Figure (tube, rainbow, N blue to C red):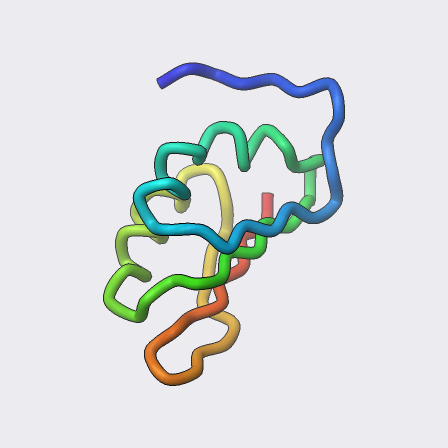
Length: 78
């Protein structure tokens, strides 16, 4: 995959998009974070959590922080 480097990095990046799009944008999402930055992912279905964790666990400490009616809110720390 390509390595994205942005001049601007943020303390927090939030994405509320479909699973496949999150995975496609993984490098961009990670590159957008300052060291120690937080990635917030919402709109994740419960059965998609393992895909998110598998895709991001090498770059972020990622976990489920909330769930409601089968939907998850996940947080990753760079």
